[in-house]
Length: 220
Image 1 (tube, rainbow, N blue to C red):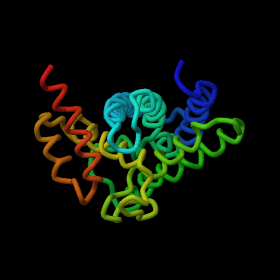
Image 2 (cartoon, rainbow, N blue to C red):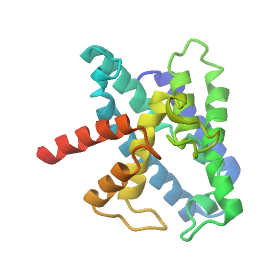
Image 3 (cartoon, rainbow, N blue to C red):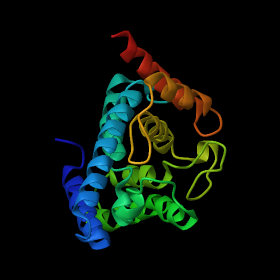
Image 4 (cartoon, rainbow, N blue to C red):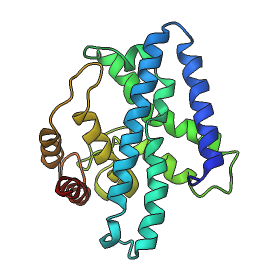
């Protein structure tokens, strides 16, 4: 059973309800595509974030047991990192061409909207120790190491560590795999994009963790 299973079940229900409120049944095909794309992306990000977390013993988590516990919890948080997209129009999320300025602003709002949705649901689970991690990741996974990210322009270690890690996993998956507006690209190119972002978009230590995971996969 995943950590905080009662909370996460309620989050799934709340997200679906919010998506229906925003999008209704105006375009079933589009809505289904957006949900499928978001869910599949989030599952891959969660798996990669969990593998990265399992290698964090040299970053203040000094035991394998602590890393294993954190990996499970952070995988759950990563699974819900894009929950705020439930409150964004599917017409925007599924647009096959570049977003205009207003659409891009609406899409970026998913970080703050996700934190708000988590706060609303987590208020019914006052004893949950997972809620804070869920909120941090949803709110801060688009902050950048150099301070030019959103929604708050946090910089460096002021960005929660969990969000810094998920940011790398999220970006790699978004670059690597096809979206409605882009084709998939080779794995080597996606890895290079992450490496190139170290020190600007990403915490260099998190990029190091990422590389240790992808190198291990390549060697199998």
